[in-house]
Length: 372
Image (cartoon, rainbow, N blue to C red; front, side, top):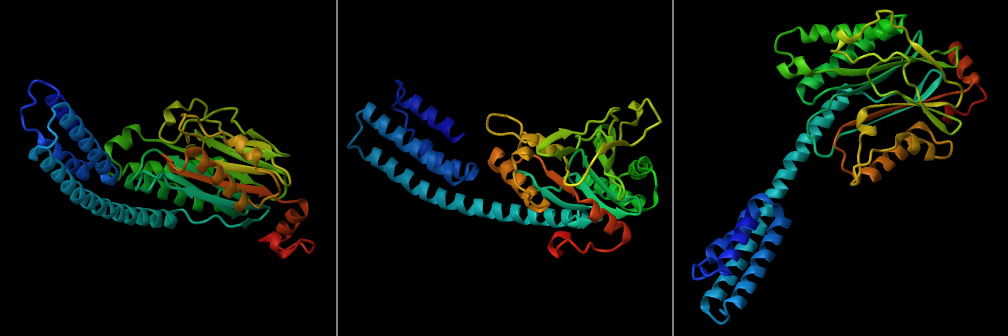
């Protein structure tokens, strides 16, 4: 609006109707910019107003008149006041937004507790990043637990944000944390999570109408047995995990894709079974949400996650490895994430560690710092 007004003033002053006094209109542009465009917009509007005043005074040969200098003085005074007001409003808004974000992050950290650095035969690390432009808690979820059946992990993404997404995340994680310790079959763990979410959705008023009609939740559950160098996966519409083996990355694509929670009517085969893949010593597997692979740069290019993983050299610990991924993601997006992202990285340790984990003791030959 400030620049449209300035353009209108310029048109009047360069037309035969230049006898109309447009000074008050031009003076108002910095004030309007101060209300809606912030300090930088105020400076830009002031520069445009001054440029138009100089142009029209020259075109109409009005230099030396009291009216021209009065207009300049009015623009100067209004601009200073607008800049000060805009700065104060911007600081107040930023303070409130930062407070909301802190509350959102605190709430998310209560639900998404940190993954332990060591779980039986694997070392692990997790990372959760909130979108820069969002203050609401997102629907990303993850967890890793040590169970009698091995290490079990879950990663998922609830469509939407806000309280509805938080409720869904809490329900799925609660069901997983319970079922992971008592269900022998990995598919039954997934079914328990699905059933818990269906029970919650049946309670009136828990989810809004849009979430009930269009909502869905993608979930991936993995299991790393203690006694075998494999990983078992059950995938319900989630992006496939990436396996880093000897410097090369491959996606563990499901042979029989399954729909996410909420779209059970598209399941055509009831005989769902976990799929197994080799996962030997020193192999690493990354579980992540779609906010990672859908992150874009200024040229609208997606983040190449497999290439980024392959480009990280050296035997880095899982937390450092995730830190390097975070750095590359930050560089790709220039710090402007449009969606929440979550990642879990696990590294399979050697056979000696597997035997020690099965016997419930620490291997003697490993330094203490490597077992943490």
